[in-house]
Image 1 (cartoon, one colour):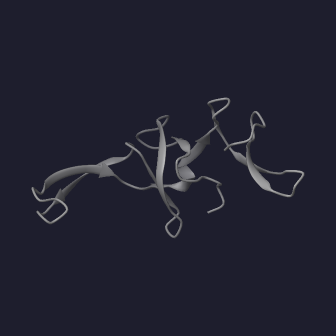
Image 2 (tube, one colour):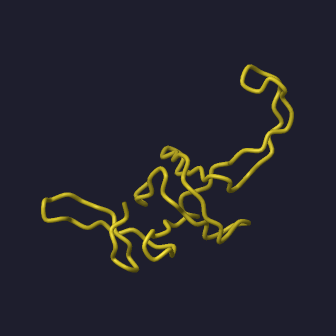
Length: 105
């Protein structure tokens, strides 16, 4: 994986049909190198009636996107950026923005 993106981060798509759109990370699938972003890459799924979907029918939901197609949006400069690792004085490693140098919480 190695991109430093975590759940609830804001990311922007850098390629594909929805290039330039951003959203919040819902989940990360590290085994498949994919990421699920809120209200992006929506697909229509034909579902049979079940306990979860009592009515059944066509349901819209998010589909996973490959990690290489997203970049983290810095909360300070609001631009898509790469993530750097910075060591603090107490030896703790934190994520930082490569553009403005600010700490990414």
